[in-house]
Image (cartoon, rainbow, N blue to C red; front, side):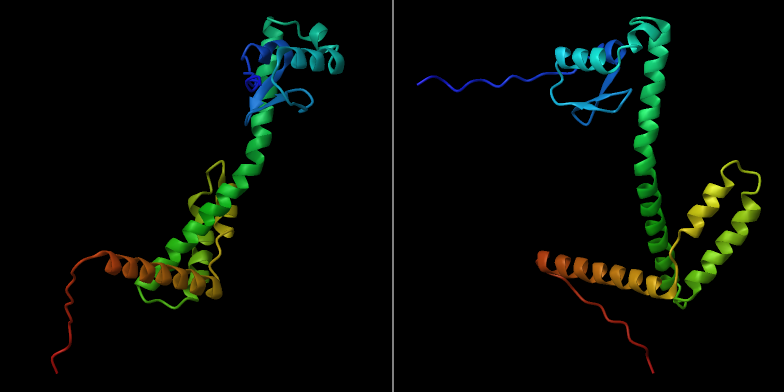
Length: 189
């Protein structure tokens, strides 16, 4: 019996960005012009795609020229902008959730009613209009504040989640420790 056939691995060469207008995105070769992907990053596959699908690009943007290099940079920046368009809202949503938890924690710590969350949000919006009036990204800041979820049911849920998390951590710590002591404070009447 013959030994198992060794599989070949192909690696993307960075020179192919300028030569064939391709780049690597998450272990896939992506054409910067039409956003098509090539399964195996072999020079022949990239060259075939470039010469059959984008025949005129070699004439308009000659390889190794400044014009071609600038076009590659522009196409890569466009691709990155498209990719961040999908990740930016997720980051903003996560930040709004974390901010909502922090405000809920402050309300619980100061023993304030949960309805005060909506008052805090309203105060943020009103002061934001004044504080950030001269900022270039004022609308972005105000929309991020508007994204905060601080209604009474949501603040209640956030505080319940934090309370349950603290109880779980306390139970875990008690189970892990060998000894512990208790100290009770009671009023002298």
